[in-house]
Image 1 (cartoon, rainbow, N blue to C red):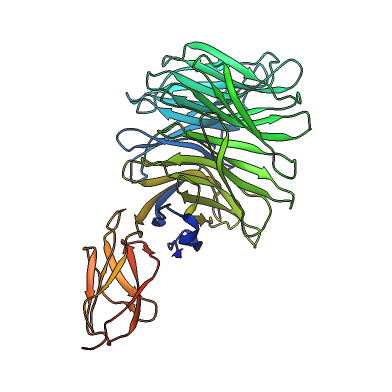
Image 2: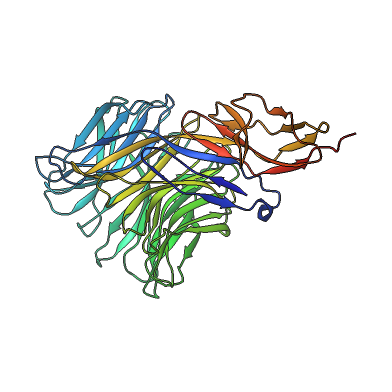
Length: 490
C-alpha cells in the first residue's frame, strides 16, 4: 500500500491508504500536494470577501474573480491579477447602480490576453442582472453587458468559457414571469455581442441553476448545475448542448436522501470524457462531495464520494485536469471539531484518490475552496475564502507544489550473500531526488538522483524490506515496500 502525508504550515495532512492489488492495471503514482505560498485580500469595509473562480494566462499569471466589501457600501465585483509568486499586480472593482451586493463568479482569459468575467450586478431599477465584463491584461475595463430576465427580478451569471475560435459561452439562471428560475446558457463573440441563448427548466417548475460551462474540441457545450424535479427535489444536472445551444443529452443525479444535490463544475478531457464535481444528499443525513466521469453521451462511467470526519455537510466546487487527464478537485470538509476546512484532492482518471489536503484558517471556523487551476509545470492554484483571527473572512489564493513519482517498477536483485541492488521508475514531477528507506532504520542511501542503489554489508540469507521515497524541499512521498533475501553463503 501507499501512505501519503502532506506536511506544512497550513496543511492538515490526511493519510491516504491505497491497496495496490485492488487497482488491476491502473498505475497509482506517489503524490504529495504541498502548500507553497498563499495570500489573502481584504476589502476596506472588513466584511466578507470571496474568491469564486481562478484561471491562468499563457504567461503563468493568475486571475481571480470574486467579490469584495468596500466602505462605499455593499460587495463589489472584484478581479485580481497575480504573478506566479502570488504577488498582486493589478485589480479592479465594479459597483452596480443599485448599491447592494455585486459579485464576479466566473473568469476566462483569451489567447490574446483579454480577460472576461461573469457575475451579477445590483441595479437601481431593482433586482440583480447578469453581468459580463471584458478587461485588458492590466484589468482596465474595455466593455460590459448586462442581461435582465423577463421577470425583472434576480438573474445571476456563474460560469464562462471560450472555445478555440474565440466564442464565449456563459451560464447562470434567469427568473421568468411565473417566478421560477431556469438554467440559462448563451453565446457571445469576443466583443460581447450577443449571438444566441437557451433556457432549460426542470420538470418541477421550481428553481434551476447553471453553475459551470465548458466546451470540448468538437464545440459541444456542457453545463453543470441542478434542476428542480416533479419529485420535489433538486437534482445534480449535467447537460450537453450543440454549438447552437440545442440540448442533445442530459443526466440528472439524485442522492439517496432525495434532498438538494448540485453540480458545481464540469471539465472535458482530450478524449471527450466529462468530469463533474458537486454534492449529493445521502440517507445518513450527510451531504457529500461527489465526483463522476461520464462518457460523451453523459452516461456515468465512474463516480466517487468524499466525506469529512464529522459526517455532516461537505461539498465540492472546483475541478481542473492536468495535461495527462488527472483531475484536481477543491471544496470543503467538516472535521470532528465542527470546523469547515478548505479541501483539495488529486485523483487519477478513474477517480481513485491519490492524495488530499485540508487548510484551516487562523479563525479556525469556516474556510472554503471555490475553484482550482493547474499550470503547465503542475503547480496547483486554489481560490476561495479564509476566516482569519484578524480581518474576518478574506479572499484566499494559494499555490501548491505537486510532487509525484511512479512506483510501478520497483525491483530488488540479490547480488550475493551481502548485497542487494534496488531499482525503481524515475517518472515524476518537482522532485529533487530519491532515498532508500527502512521502516526500522530510516534513510539508508542518503539523497541520490539516480534510480538505483546498491546496499552492501548485509547479513547472508536474510530477508530485507525497503521503500523508495521521492522528495523535494517541502514534501516526500513513499512507495510500497519491496522485499528480498540475500543469498546464502557459498
